[in-house]
Length: 172
Image 1 (cartoon, rainbow, N blue to C red):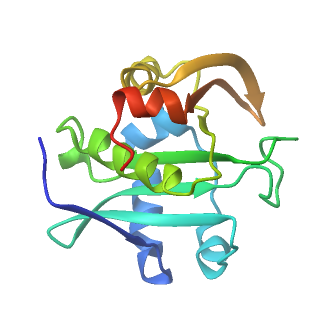
Image 2: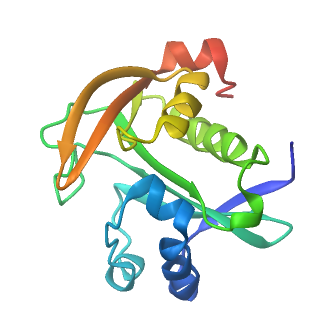
């Protein structure tokens, strides 16, 4: 399914919607119970991060976060080389799950990352137990790197290089 989708900056007006999405069973299953601290995070605008809302016909359906893991202030990823980006993504509205919109969102996020000439690769960290997400990322060209524990979560780290993306995902 291809729909007219746009990504817009997340704002404080999205707070209640993001909290509601965090409680959706399909979101809890996909990303765990991590508290994103929306109140404080939406008020911040660091130059190393984009928090975006995916919309179809002006209706919010999902969330995308793109960070520079080498510059991110919580050091979630630990020591990272420059020229990487990390993406978090989810469809928040249950009615839009399983309709191909996650693929469209992810392709838009990948394009956004590789629009910066310095970006060499994108990393992601789905829960190791989330086989559906892992297959999704593999279909988009991400390659498994390692199992890694982030906080309380066992994750599978994947990487998509610019050259891998250009062979399977339009980055222009």
